[in-house]
Image 1 (cartoon, rainbow, N blue to C red):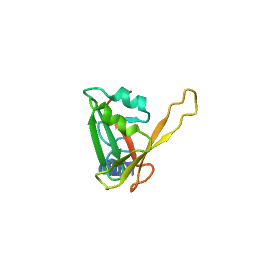
Image 2: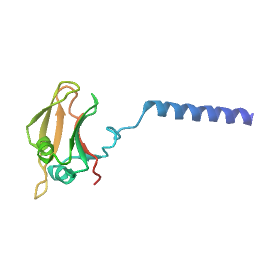
Image 3: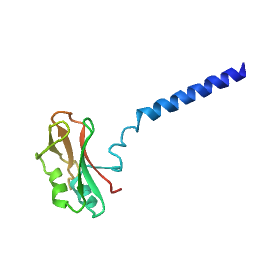
Image 4: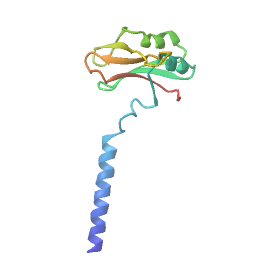
Length: 130
């Protein structure tokens, strides 16, 4: 009786391992090698290092637009309020919305909204770790 319970436990463990391996990485791990979400213009400026990259990513359509840290002007353009950027994956428009900070001095955060994928899909991220 105990041996059959062991076989059942092993089979369940193998099934769980296999299904999690097939499902791929969990949330927050896409795009690979971009562990830091960039929410403010100051964070974007600190990520503008020559060997680092910053990306505008759209999680739903899996589009990543990378820029080198040396392209400071291009990266900071992603943090200009009410600007629009093309999404090559879904052909939507990513609009930048400024969310005012509540403390003095106010530090504004930016929300990127994709016209086709929705409010929570687009964001900026960086290879540079905080």
